Image (cartoon, rainbow, N blue to C red):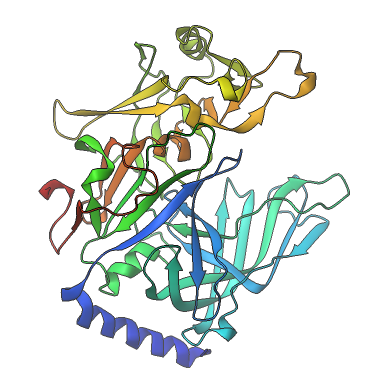
Length: 421
């Protein structure tokens, strides 16, 4: 391990050399991803860092942000307050299997970082960056990946006095397109800058599953596409991100259930966010469109405490009932429809025993605002091309479960993209 300012100069020299020598031989990188069966689950990957540590770290693969970080060995989290940014009375050390001092491939240098999530309900900060090898489970090692190392975090979460350690992120790999507001490290952009991929492209998908109420598996490819992971036509949809926003923003879709289609009445754009556990459909709070939507399900879906759920036990959710989201395409006359099985919204929550409403399987689904998180992406195939700020969608959840990359893989060369398929 190296450290200090001299290490930064060494890294800059190495990064420049990689850009010059590997662009012509650029390839692709594949990472398996998962969507756990858990109420707060998001799209995650199991990653190991460095030459010495083999225990993986579960990190969030987040299209809602563009910065990459994990915890340093001396990290501490604080909680117990319900106020934003407040340091509560509870704290705990963060266990992490990664220690750059034990990695022969690590380059550590001083660099401050602070990242805030969920409306500042989660804030992490640190004073160092590290460059080291990153390896996804069943994936290829990626050399010289730059990651921020955080040693301090605050969570907006009340505590009953027991200071029971809450759930918290072990790391986040931001996948949103790099912009001039990205503070960094920018994982996808750094792959491109180092010449490891020839295009600033990424695809994400989930496989078809025959098992209801389970962990879902899929993958991410940087610098290429596996065309067996979707069906139908891959359609470019409008990119409607505002100048001040970070993430992936698309127009609101029409929403169909049981053959009845609703045109959402909320004036909004929609965040496509793999780091979010739930979907939010843009039905205005003050209208009755949510009630009409639930009525169209013929009693299958109901609402409890503002959350949409299945009227019965999770085990009885029908496998053939979908919610269909139809987005306009960039090309006139084009659109793309994504079917999401309602069973994919179930993540293990039932109504409490004292609810006196019978069994309700609560979904990671609400109305108001517009966000399409991990549940939506469990049914969609998504492609991003930062060169033209392009967003592409198709119907996913069609490939064999756990298949990985197939013979339908195409590695993009410089100047190629989804429009050249």
